[in-house]
Image (tube, rainbow, N blue to C red; front, side, top):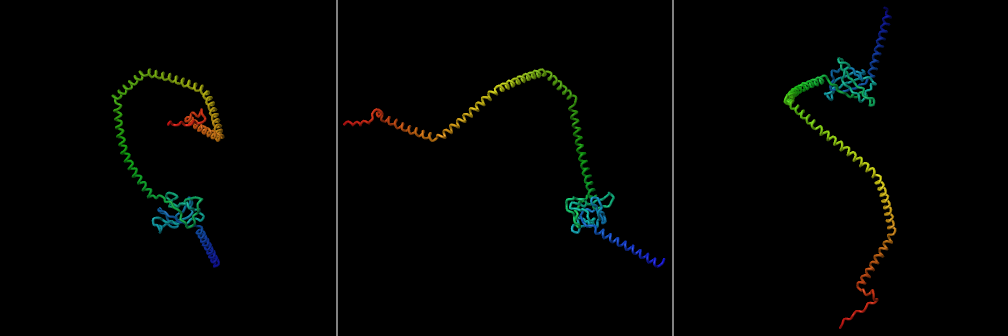
Length: 308
């Protein structure tokens, strides 16, 4: 190969390398600028490591960039995330530890939240929701197994008690249903049958008397209804006439009251004149009682002199 060919090949290789480097650097910068950083906190990370997937509504939107205890609160784990710009994280989105399959590595799963709340800006904290760990599940299963054993022991004790009570009840039933008690019950039933046979005619007679009394009561009620019906019209007529008479009386009393109010002055004058006439008559009566001769003589006679 000539020197010109070697130089040309070297130049071509350098140009290809340069183009590839420029493309990779530009793509890396573009990808780096198209992501936004967020963080969240969990009490249990469950083997989560950096570079784990971040899912939003089940869709891979980013990666975990850091997992470490929180410096201000060592009881929780700070998890740093980078997600694609434009991912609609909002104030009601919840980050929790999850996995796509049972054997897959853990991931951070973020819920879609709600559409009517503000979006989270880059660098904000995503609210979190704790996931029950395997240890917690195992402890609950152990506690449930212990409770089940206690319950089974208690049930066995109660079952023994119920079995004893059942046996005692069956024994009592056997005693009650013995041959002597059965014969006694048969005698009672026989006496009851004979009593019913003896009382049947009397019961029939009483039933007939009750029916007769019921018919008579119905006839009495019917007669009372007829009497009330016959008297209803005259009573209504008398009531109407009495109402009319009361109305006329009320009108007459109103007229008399109006007449009295109109002639109250004349009535007072007449009463005063009658009172004066009565006074004068009293004076005349008193005068006649004192001087009865005044009815005959006009002048009063002189008094008699006392004899000397």
